[in-house]
Amino acid sequence: MRIFDPHIHMTSRTTDDYEAMYAAGVRAVTEPAFWLGQPRSSAASFYDYFDALVGWERFRAAQFGIRHHCTIALNPKEANDPRCAEVLDALPRYLAKDGVVAVGEVGFDSMTDDEEKAFVRQLDLAGEHDLPVLVHTPHRDKVEGTRRTLELVAASGLPPERVLVDHLNEVTVDMVAGSGCWLGFSIYPDTKMDERRMVRILADHGLDRMIVNSAADWGRSDPLKTAKTGQAMRGAGFSEDDVDRVLWRNPVAFYGQSGRLLLDPVDIDQTATFEGNSVLRGQRPA
Image (cartoon, rainbow, N blue to C red; front, side, top):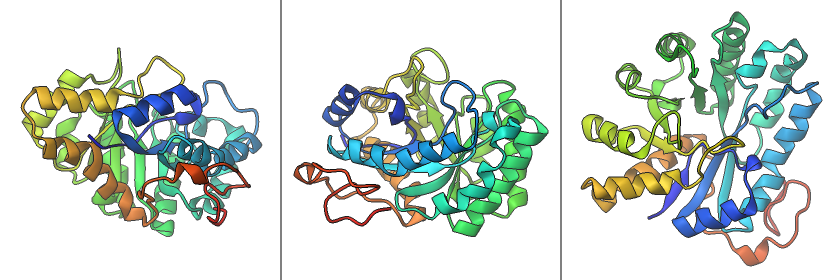
């Protein structure tokens, strides 16, 4: 089983997690920029965080044989904090960097006007930088949040196949399936989706544009949920090709639209030094 986890917050995970993920078949990840668990006190803290995503975390993942990519954005929750507003003006210099494969996470948290303004602006930035978009749907009032998300995506003029609408469940899958956007599902120990429910959705709706992720972060989560979903698919009678499509080829197809994926095997012997944003010796800084 080869796995591309398309949404996982490795900044919050340990090196033991990287080792376990590699052993389970994970060879590539995408790490979206997100809320760190407490309010940032200034925009400057975002820039340090973004620098770590495009530099240090790529290097750290490579030490364990895993290709690391990221998405960059002002996340929905912090779009409500006026101290963070200037981050929107700094995004273009990060969206131009190697390893940045989408704008994200953008979307809604509490469905405020400020969140919507930041969402619309970042959809525009995605078009300007020819990047796909990773959209966070709210954990509260998910149906209305997903409905409004699809309205704004349609109004943006972005092709729906360049938009991944994440954190879906049984009550939102149909509306996103009909939109032409990609469908993202986060598999969690207690909340969101689990493997059994995910397999049922795949059986009912097919594999087209389906994206499965662990969304593992600093909360109770599991970076092996992608592998466990693959095992559940096998147990339900899905073929090895089906598993490969959902866990590898689908995320590659979506993020491949950026033109920036690196999926060749990592030469772990070449990851001994870290210089600026370089990941491997001889590779130019991002």
